[in-house]
Picture 1 (cartoon, rainbow, N blue to C red):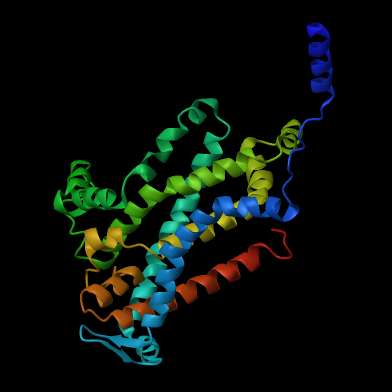
Picture 2 (tube, helix red, strand yellow; picture 1 turned 180 degrees about the vertical axis):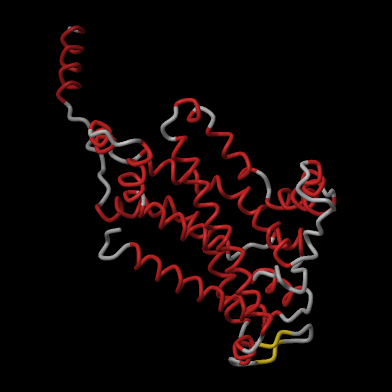
Length: 311
């Protein structure tokens, strides 16, 4: 009798259907990924969007310690007539442009050897080390090498290239050279990473076909690999160019805009207007104008290199 009851209970248990899982609605399934990234998006908006909107709003006022006085567009009209602003913008273009060209050439040359040579490929981490240092630490190192410690001058004197110490911060182009060297040394690895990734992602069959036809590796790189790298180079140049407009640490630590404002970049100009003359509305207007210039230049380059969605 007991076995019969247990058998019936077992059969009933087997025959009983499992409770159906409650399926989420399509709307909730689509909403779930956005909920996961929402905290990060909110955080980024708080540290980027809010300060930007606040700076634009502040640019329409004369900001003093006693209060804010409405200024309309007067800060912007004064900037258009400010020679120091245009000089800082020109210095940013000159120093940043030379740095960007050198970084692209050096990074592409290193990438050409690194992505193919097995020995160099194993030591690629060495090329990335300068980018791991803090910008302020790099600036102090190069200031010591060029100016305070006279390391570069002593080295050139030992090689017999010069007969006396060089005042790198007392001459316009020597001072600009210090900023260019410091920037190139630290940020060439950034472009190197992008270029190596772009070369490794290319179709190797095209290179092998050209190799079978008797083409040399330099010819293959110049006629096949480099043209295919055009969209990668465009993205890298735009990203690095935007970052160069914020060059501040090297200027602040090494030159502080000397001699005679020849190395004052737009970021250092904004800092000087805001935190040395305490003209925060004027500094905010300069920041807003620089943001507009950067967006315009980036859009022009994007349309130039990516017409109709193709590079």
